[in-house]
Length: 125
Figure 1: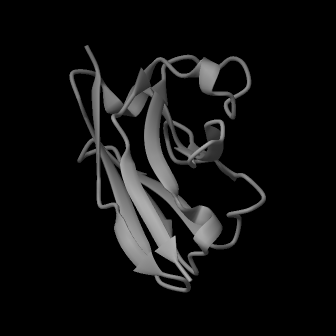
Figure 2: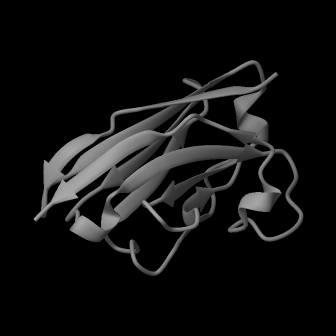
Figure 3: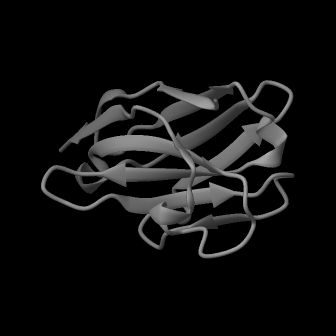
């Protein structure tokens, strides 16, 4: 069974940077497309970014493109999300997700098989 554990969340000021990590176990990390989603209070979970198995392709939602960077280290079974120029609207619980299939919409949460428990990111103005 694949397990995902997020870490690195916290409370920061607007304009600050933060890096969250997702460490996996119980599976072959390099076989999974990985993604970050987030869920703000009272809102649906939304796609943030995803990275393919061999790091050859990344994709971001418009609201974070240019500020966030997704990356992965297959040797360490870990994925990262570097968040710069944070805004109050980035406040949410951030979840990492993994999918073994390469078929379908990689921005849809329904396409992901495994999920972490989430880490809170709070950005104050």
